[in-house]
Image (cartoon, rainbow, N blue to C red; front, side, top):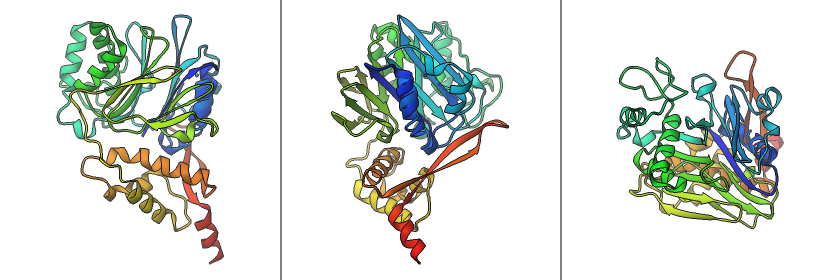
Length: 371
């Protein structure tokens, strides 16, 4: 699973995003690295998922600035000037190793580099109904080319009819840009693209057509939204957000598209509704399952906690579980009961490393030690 973050406010975005990612990447993210308020935000969340690709994008003075590479957040910061990218609005992405070179890292860019797009997820339940060939053909006919296109299959990504491969998010970036050009609204264009080409995904888009806003679309994967006196924050988990002084904090609704600004947001449903949101979310059952798994005093990652709580979810709704698990862990952390175990593991390429986080209950660990 990828980890993503967005920020817009009064501070420089790259450092904020970097701090956020550092707090979540080891829980499920990756190693293509990408910019400063953004850098600060990502630094807070990067450890929550592992991963091997990272990238960042900002807008400043009518230009889109971006950096990405194969490697974790630390590598992005040591081998690029991502931390110095200008602007008070930006997005940052880190994901696990799943194939491809640098061009398979986020952010993906429209051909004219007016739009940057990052996402978390996969086709999932929509694998049999999303026609990748049809979307690729439609965009090519409109003059689009894809930087991620390679002549052979890549990992588990969908293969085109000719045996070649394009990253799903590269196609989605092109489709958002194409739809926005047709309707005159980046927000509406993203909503149309998600409804027409769905997956078990959530994504953030940053565009010169609407430089004061981050566009968000969510079908099922986790995304939290919060606001403080200095700006508005988006992240895979609210554990990435700075401090504890949020004016407000909420989950981005499923099957919705949002236009997020420094002062607030506007939301609209995706039509037709692509996914099936759990109603109600099984908070109590998931919390009991997570606490039961953590009761042995050992450290467990998001994968193990997800498996432990899988039976709590209605059929087709399991992709929504990460949002609930992250919030349960955040509550335990704020109560002083959670210990985050940080490890360094092998990265996507020889010589590269990556952070990996797991969770352990302090009280359970203490009880196990006494026995």
